[in-house]
Length: 179
Ligand SMILES: CC(C)(COP(=O)(O)OP(=O)(O)OC[C@H]1O[C@@H](n2cnc3c(N)ncnc32)[C@H](O)[C@@H]1OP(=O)(O)O)[C@@H](O)C(=O)NCCC(=O)NCCS
Image (cartoon, rainbow, N blue to C red; front, side, top):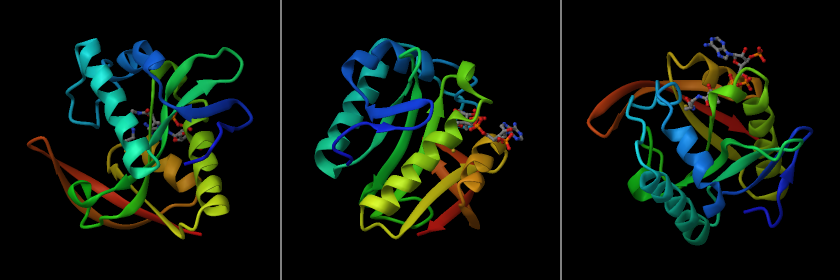
């Protein structure tokens, strides 16, 4: 995990904190955000706190996890972006023990290139500062915005798979990016 925040032109990336509770609730209670994530947005702040606690656990146990994205000029919490280490129980498309890129933003920050900027920062960090040689990502096939972000930072679609999660099935692209 980076030992200090990552700064881009417009963003600051840093670990998610308990102080991000309101922002995390705003993000994950929005039905638009969950359109391609099972249409099951959270309804309580306790659920948002559980999400934060899970990230904090991953920072400690896996050394890396998604980070908060903060607007440099306004200091607003915009969402999260970053790398998840897929352990044995959380593999996707048959892949385990790999590094996967993902992001999730509050809709008022969509369409301005922020997701792409954050994704590029993580690709740069992983390939310049770690030994990781290949990154992976998955995106729901109709989630064009997400697929575009991945392709814009260089990911290539390598196959399609059905992701089963919480009793639902998602037709997904699997994407890879080599250093
Ligand atoms: C996925 C997500 C982060 C994309 O955010 P965004 O603000 O659209 O991303 P960016 O502005 O950085 O860029 C997205 C690119 O895709 C394009 N795009 C966005 N939505 C699109 C759509 N519905 N159809 C086609 N293209 C689209 C944008 O125009 C942009 O390309 P461009 O710069 O060439 O114009 C955002 O929609 C989100 O947070 N969704 C909810 C969570 C989620 O689905 N996460 C991904 C799970 S796999």
